[in-house]
Image (cartoon, rainbow, N blue to C red; front, side, top):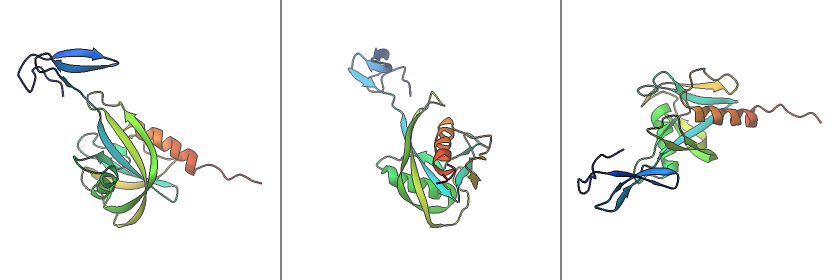
Amino acid sequence: MNFKFCPLCGNLINTQIASLSKNQYCKICRKTFYKNPAPGVAVILIEYKKILLVRRTGTYSGRWCIPCGYLEYNEDVRCAAVREIKEETGLDIEITGIFDVLSNFHDLKNQTVGIWFLGKRIGGNLLAGSDADRAVFFPLDKLPDNMAFPSDLKVCKALKTKYLVPEQKP
């Protein structure tokens, strides 16, 4: 959020350039207002060399992505990942590791930092919910054309290398 006036004293805000970023600064309060990326989580669920994707509703409607969402205040990142996949797919999972952490620059006004967790299904029934209208397993080498996020494409490319490597003959 960019302020025109200081939310503390009402004085006109200045933009100061410190290091490589532009931050807003109030000369009266001597307060810097930082614009930091929001943390997000995604869960990679691979079964039979297929990855679970959801089709978004609302923002990015009709586009596919790895089930994901934002952390809530005072929420642990792993708990957020378990919650998000339950909300979007109906599945209960356990986190088995971290696959990648990336900065997302596809929306320059709302930048995020994403953590892609690896997950394993432990229960639930596959049913789209929350901000998704479909939840489908896709072969890693046949993803839908209309993916929502460039960072998911980067993650899927790395997953293809890991899961679709041809077996070596002795």
